[in-house]
Length: 378
Image (cartoon, rainbow, N blue to C red; front, side, top):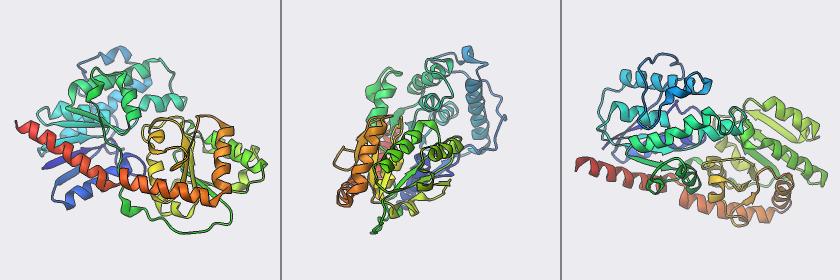
């Protein structure tokens, strides 16, 4: 069975799709499947000129909007690059971005196309202060969900929470499948260690949506109560300077290490004690599964896919979004009690191996692929 995995941009860094798809392809190919990866190089800009038309809404009434125009031009560029580069035929195409899904179905209408929604671009833009709720950009981007429903053969997503979010924008939400992201369990090796001082770690892009301002304020509360710690922040982004200034103003700059971007944080993560990320929204929250596979206790917010991964008090701790006192209390619990965080980490590792290992997810995908190949032949 020949399958094309269609990404948006190349998988250049860990997290989400980039963590999953290349390893998934390797697993399938080792078992005799024919699977290839396709994406749009970031250097491709302004090449596409082909007219864009959607079946379920008129995008041109949003023309002139900066976000919309950029999206449409990227769509055109993806069409141009796909026509240039793809000369083979495939039994099935699995797309991982709305542009990839719609372009592939447009150019290969007789090939089954499965579309996995990994995140919500409009929610990310709103949380990061780039667009306003209810504006043209949100309306345009959410309209694409209905267009995908109309065009592709199957929509799947990575959590029940995100499926419920998508339900507002499609006609038959019950048809949306749920398959979580999968992680190559061989990449993650918990390491037995004893740190004299609790080591907290977070890994993410430094943007407002990740709630790192809340984390820094909670850590300041932790310090005021006399609990020592070191906070390690791996990642880069537009608000790094702002976060460094906040850490300094809160008196915890010397307790915080900003590393910047790191290619393979999973090699580094097992030597820490607690993973914490107070995101304001997450469709799945891949980094929580990765941290669990590294043997860390995890602390997150009660939103989206995070709340599906963490059962509060069993394999981690959940706190409300933007609640500094609650996050400080959760960190105090895990930082001050090594046996408690060990127990949380042990259960988290067991669940992650059972539910989010690449072996488990590949089995689910294999079943879905065979279903659509069978339907295509009938």
